[in-house]
Length: 219
Image (tube, rainbow, N blue to C red; front, side, top):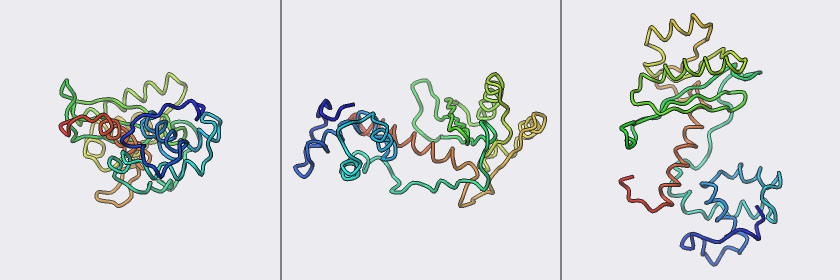
């Protein structure tokens, strides 16, 4: 993207007289990329995907994004040191989580199941109608990973009952030589930190898109 070719839009958001033309165009690109994070845009500039702009312009610009202020609830990201050990190969450790208690989709699905590979960041998301289907999603994921020539060695989750008290699932993990790392109840830090942070990023992006669309709060 050449910064000179960026089209100005969202005039009610980026028309502040305190911003330069380049900064306003940066906000336009930022919004067209679904309000991507500062780190993502920095990498895009460093790799030459966005030209004609500096990182200093970017730092001053994103502080002016009202959509991000209204939609992203956390001011600071969580530490990257999510766990005591680090995976040394793909699918050595997979982090899982469930996102629910949201307004249902048009076909009545209220939540989604998500698994993130600690080593590569590879992500699998599936809409689930019932919370106990997160285990079925993981079983499907294990079979899918096997077709790629890998074996999941460890599953990192919180203490959600579907993961830790469902005897059939716990036994299935043992039969498939998959270790289970579950957080203690009400623990401040969760073993599935990669999934927790990734889920926050997904939800924040969706909120930004909804907020920017101007749809009623019903949605």
